Image (cartoon, rainbow, N blue to C red):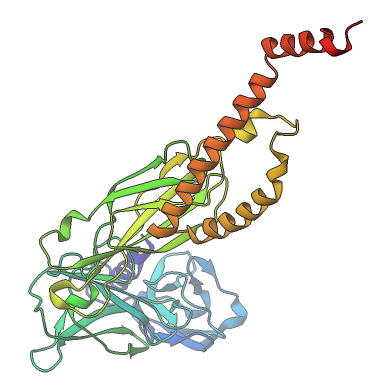
Length: 409
């Protein structure tokens, strides 16, 4: 409603006749922040009003009489110093009133700053046939008055300058070009910012549509256990469906985190495969996993594409460790092999470290060692169980109670 007030104020300048009641000068000025303004309100002598009975308001608040100056019986001025930025982009409302409160005339004050050069202009295409661009206003971004941003583009070596028309993407400082774009030829793209106090133009970027293609996130992301291995998970996903008909080689990234953590670990060496084994994880722990895609080499382009958004998180838990579940603190048999075990632990610790990511060789070697170790634990546990069984205890008692024939009396 406030934005309509400036238009409604002009109605107050006329009554039933065409004779103007009053007028304010200057009308709807644009001023820089920190500047001063002296405005005058002149009433028509035919109305029989005297200026010393009038008063001023700014955005509905009455201004102190110390800021007034009576210039003539029908002319009253007001002086404002160190103006702040307009409270609304449609302008601040400076109004002249008669003594009984009626509105005589009004003016909209546009107090702000000229725009600065827009920055961070980036563009991307989701299907090689459209183009979306976004940018950031220069400086602090706040001009306090309405500022228009226009995205312009043209073919680099020929073609006329064109303007992007679709700014209704739901995000500020974004524009969408849906069609009529050429491939295999570069475009020059820039943004112009303008308001009542000045204009500014961004740097010009040059791009080929094929070099800025992105995709939807990979779909059907599944995370599952690797048998009973308590420190590994397998991640599988599907290629983005939108670009299956294009000649390109996708590149993927994976990131994962603990359930109770906000810190992500990123796996960069996935390549173009659609599955990956994560190793070196905590046993009995829930992990959240996401995947994203970068299309590389669309129609022979030599530049990397733009990473997609991350997929929706998928979750899975690693199995609990058998050693943690047993809770036993008894010494295990085979302590004579402790030195060998320590050496193996150091060696396979190195293997485990290098099994991070999706490298196949170290993963296979690590798996072989884990299988051997699990079998070793099972054999050891079986020996301990047999040693502690009632049958073995009875046999040991029988053997110790029965005297040896050589020592019989």
